Length: 276
Image (cartoon, rainbow, N blue to C red; front, side):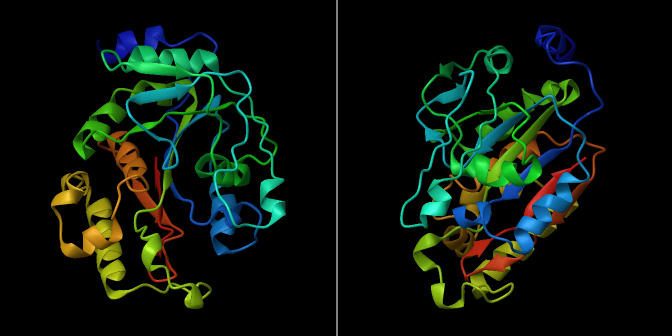
């Protein structure tokens, strides 16, 4: 199936647009949904640069499944998939509509991959905690695509390329996770220290940033083959793989830029990516 045919298959409810940006957002703590800090400011500043999308497709670290699923309900629920936080965070609702039409088109675009149209999930905090800063009025439809935990980085990179046609239909595609994400080693005593990371986290952030800015994506796709520092930074892949989707959507002549590019609490990074 070529790109032209892909475009013809996409529902008429999505008008032709200029090519939409692609984002990877380092979402960090769920508290970023309700706190005021430099990273939230970074998301809001980003929002000022974005065209108004017809819909948003989010690939979140927090929907890690056996197989591939896409949310297909009219009104996705706000999922509070965390514990131990203040009641104010549990009170947050993000009442964006879903888009069954977009879900169905993604199912078609990803053929022959079997995609389940899901009616149960909703919007997890990897999605709503950051999207609420981009579109606080919740007036843009949002759906989620799950990450198949049985597949390799290369598989996810290739899968992302199959949905690239959505970008010229006004669909903003957002990966949400964290490149460096080792919760077992978080230094809570230094959580508020600016741009603080362990030596191995600093090493990985610098290497990843160089690969990103040089357009050298293969080492990032093959992250499991990299150094011991990478193994510490990415002990499990769910927060890292949304970045791979973002990179799979980059066009050859497009520019990649970084923002919120800081380490946090020793073993986390908030580095975020914009491709346009």
